[in-house]
Length: 353
Image (cartoon, rainbow, N blue to C red; front, side):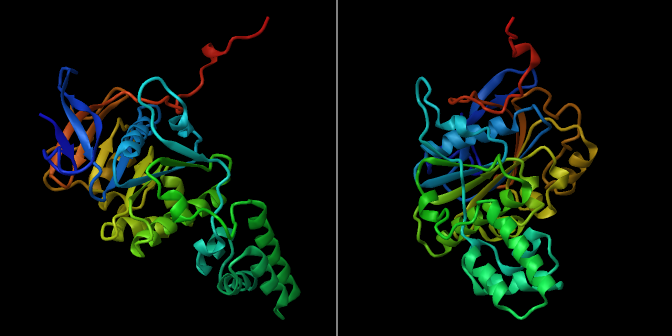
């Protein structure tokens, strides 16, 4: 008998994706486990490096790309998900890679512009950037606003230099990514692996804002699913307010968030407490286990730190499903597309003699 995480046993009641199978104590596989893609969810995938959290996110992306009525988008800080778009024998998935992403400058509010550029809004340069973000919709307009003020020369120079730095990142464009571009049934991979933390966060913020606004205004029909690998990187930057909005208010407009991280202790409490599905690979750091323990639901009759319940091998997971108030031990299914997250090995390198 199959079970649908996030919904129960109603397999035919809306789109689902096959996650894997139940894992018995002796390691054998049991009945099939699916994930609910019909309604909005906040999912958290955790696990130490090398135990399969990015692989599991790839499994989810494959399922979402084949599901009706959803628009999956991956923000990829490691450059490992472009393999979803590779041609493979058998059933591949529809996927598009955006390897030079840009978002509109208006994706960031004035306070976020100051935070992005490392300026205090109470400083002279920070105040100018704040005003420029209110007055202009492009970086050129923002720089022109700064130059037209009668502020001290030193403040104007500092503000202009910071705005030129943002321009040099090449991630801001008035015609940047919009929700219509992200709203297709194919999975969209936004490759930010070549960017530093600040511009990477700016892109994530713009994408998250665009998806949320599009559903609030009903300008896209499909329900967006935003998938973030290394999510702690974004929760610790200017993307955080947009992610918090999806976590706390995304259910009504139908926006889902899937966050994967090897450091759950670095994710804000809201990122854990608002997750209705937790997929845990192996964890060994006590601080990470404590972070999950603090948000553990009352119906759990064991701790994730219990040695006999904690996953041990790559691909093994414990799933806490808040929607049905159930806990499952499972083995994640094999990917249909190549996995790009494996680490290189010296033994794989063949030296030329």
